[in-house]
Image (cartoon, rainbow, N blue to C red; front, side, top):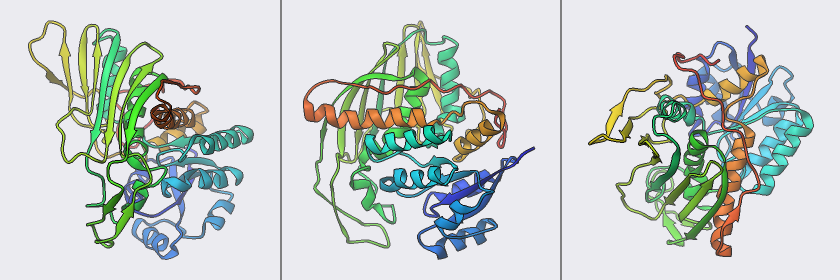
Length: 366
């Protein structure tokens, strides 16, 4: 089988799980890695037996590398994606696609001009938990979806992340950080969004880092840190959403979908597995249902693998640039809605990604 050679730009906190998992797909080879700190790239290359640690320029000039995985910080995702595409390579980036809609448009336009693919995290919607929910909805278990809820509330990342400043700058905040997981899961389950409305705020203008190595450093906050919104989906479902870095604790479910014949409690979209709990019309209580799909462990990299396999077999990939741009459009429209005091019509759209087949083992995609 043809192997797709992958280069990785960014060898920071998230990279180890990608390096670990991508080795499990026999049609992939991580051929090179790069980082602004070349010593960090060399350390990762040595740890994960990657053939080459090099500069970004050298990685992008390598004619054998066909796909580049962009694991840089969110504010430069679009800039790095454009470099990748200009070098004639397919790009797959961590979430979000870009820090704003205009930069996202530039990425998608460049890819279209060059007939290249853009992919984007999250790929957690391909995990066994959310794919089981997808099958239940597609099979009509809850009837017609009519409504839903989506909640992600915590007090931010400055207590644990080694370098949390970027979470509180443009392109960060709870919506741009965690919203892609929730919105991608919802689009996978319900399809594209038609319009949104929201109220947003920034509660704390400064944050104190208590994690190492920057313990005691003050962060100036420059982005929304609490958002309450509503989405009207093209299929008629209405979903309420709250994302927050201002809440000390909450006991709300991550996602619930309500249909004419029943309900589904969707597991945490920041993970691949988790319990799927259902309520059927006429039942007396919620009940957990077995997962119908694999990839229930941490499978980050599955979206990259699916895109690479799609290149080989000339099919559409699931964690697509179109869906990532639609997610970005929704997230920015929430803030615009709060500023304008009205609903915002979403101009972009995307196809609901094809469901993943059941019965796949780790390292397999269709």
